[in-house]
Image (cartoon, rainbow, N blue to C red; front, side, top):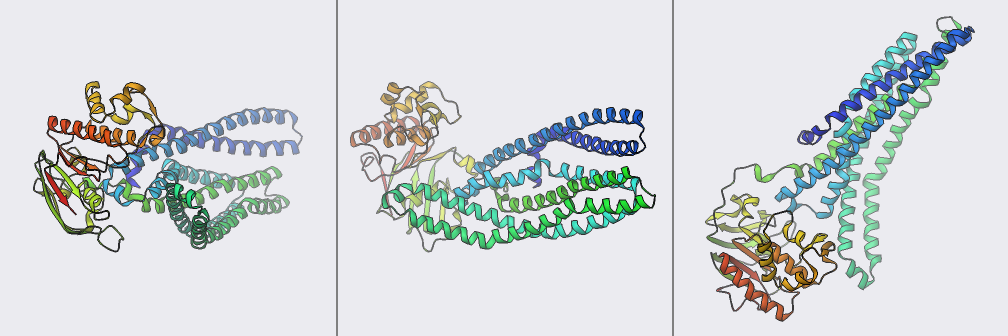
Length: 536
């Protein structure tokens, strides 16, 4: 988790304030206990004048104590909540930058990692170390105060603390183990629910929600058997040990103190004070045990998601990507991870600068797989063959640099909730003339003129047609003027007239910017313009 420390450097001030408020509230709490002991002993000897003075002092310290507690809790919450959101942002950025992780990670599990797993890691990273250091200091102060009242009772209490703490740590290790299993189980459930929602139209039409429910039930039962039962058992044992500290130790201390009162070695006020201190010992002991458990849980969760924070592209030096001249592909087969057979028959071709190439073949013959390989959108470990860009394997290039020269438009365009302009720019800057040009090329000029460039599109284009959504996706990529543009059935939602107009305008755009295009299309939209055909 060392890699994540930089995320929390921005909270140094909050950490300092939290630590000072925490120590301040503890010290004033100890002063209150000492004053209470004096009040009791003063009341026993009926010294009214000194008693009134102590009461006034007690009320002043009590006010300071409450203010310190409020400050302590305020800065603690800031650390926890701000740290969590900061880590979630950092995780999102890391995930997006980590090209290899994006290809290998299930999207449902990735969302779970960004929302659930980061919460566990951040809970420790934001306040864990400073809290555990503070609790050890407080525990030491409490024991020193008990020594002031009675050394024997302090020694007995210390031995009990060691025994309970040792048992708690043993149970905590097992609890951390099963907590890790629980988080993995929750990640699989999230992925399954995500998949179910994607298949909602199928579920609705076939009325087979019961089938999906039964599968979910089996997953829950498996998770309960592998994780929940064990987690519940060791949490119960751990809580029992800590409950002993909360309810039994103060009474034991008080009873022992009464024996010393009878022998004249302690006063009644000191006996009550040492009981109150023993009662306060519960907090640091319980919190230290919990914090150690939090650390183990955070380390377990981080071990599972650590790959998100590794930028695979930076591990080795990559070749500089030159201007596009040629792509050479010669593949015998390609097998997706965990797949039983090849998704691609042997295929070989070359594409040169300025080509308008079409990939043709029956459904399932591997056309989309070829495009995913060229665009490095799948794991290349299952590839038997070679794919070269300008004479060098495509994996020799950093993905970020590679995509400056080659872009793909997918059949299913994903839009964000925002204006047409926002969906085109995605945070980049282009001139209005450039925007107008791609809108015209993609036959969106009338659409934007009628509704305006700032027309609000709902998430994933829920308030526009499929054809308009596709064309916005095309315009988004054309705006970047890639040297190589790859199109995967990008006109499937367009009517015939719009397809013909778009194809002609796209060729004009291609010629103007000297682009190379590789397309899959069942509509024969580009047959007139293509100079190269690739069969699969």
